[in-house]
Image 1: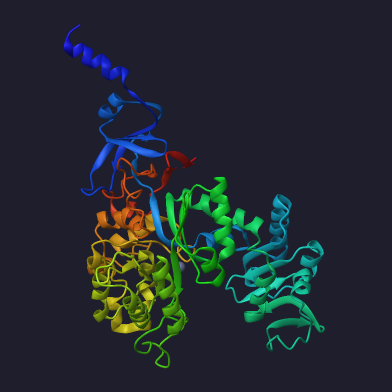
Image 2: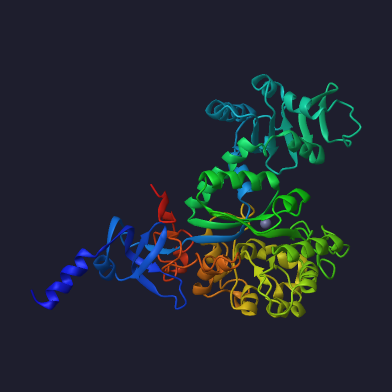
Length: 537
Ligand SMILES: [Zn+2]
């Protein structure tokens, strides 16, 4: 036997046994050179090789080969700012939208009750204007049908609820109660009808066990499935209390969740006691404290340096005091946590940055984040670069707000949603959606970041295109840069040996596709740690 033959024989015998090879389409690795490859080899949930299919087939003997049949694969998508628990809560409510009568609502509730025998029922979306009698209902039938569990149903505008008698009894409300502002309880013959408006309606949240631990597990599992469906393998979830954090922790200990979750914590005393240093439990990370400086632009709660253009009497609201912001930043700095602060208005951004720079030395690598960084005074951009403060953006906010935001802030719109300018500060930027405020679908993030149009392809030419992101950068923002925002760029965010085998397979190539074809891209498969966690039917 000649030397050549001996070598071939040896290499065949030495083929390494591994779990998985994925091949058969374009694979964007999102490595430094933004290169593509033909195949990926995976073992024990970790990528062991990328390259041509031939080179991988020669070296490895895979227990399973997945052929993506001409589709396109990307590193698993990572939403850098969503709300996992809120997403799950919304999905578990009974959807009452478009119900043509109150009886139809009762039917939908009965169906849900029979399916799962829940401890309570909550629903949203009813609208009496769609019913034969266009009047507020009363709760007589509702109370008869559900005598033992509380039921709360939100109107489509979230400014009215109808509840059953059990809910009223649990809250302890009586007709004539002095705590009910005039007009907020709809009465008939001196009795409650079960319809309550505004603040009085919102009080019924307190009696719904939406944070009961057993229920919380279902909420989180539901939200996880929704993420997988849209190709998300990782998220940063923007702030929760101790119940949610503890339920997450126990679910990860049991292996009951597979999504990689970087869950920020709300600055509560219990959270600080329980998590006094950054914490990792498998796929769960808790290493960031979430703060708020202001509210939202739509309701003029965003804090502006100068009055609103369409309401000169207000500059918006600061929702956390400077003392509290400073106290939490000091705690986080001392305990090694990141801080992530919600800042929408230009004044809010200045305040958030101002508190950070009191603690952060120039050129630090603490990766403290400004969430949204939505409207900035031109003078404040450079602070991000100088202090390595991470702007965490939501490209769909730009396209959701663009048609009315200019009315609110006038010429200040020029330095709002300024994603390209913000990217230039650090040379990287994470993106997310703020789901359930926006849709979960990360394709919309990519589309909004690149084309700066809404899903109706408006405006023609795009909104303030000087702040669009390049396609490659938009993809990085939802993969490797989102990972970097939670200090996880060495473990995930690109398809490279040594990293988690987290992949998203789409039915098309969003980098080369025609603009018109981008928003309708569909997820075919989602892999986390080499395991297929979603497959389109
Ligand atoms: Zn948020």
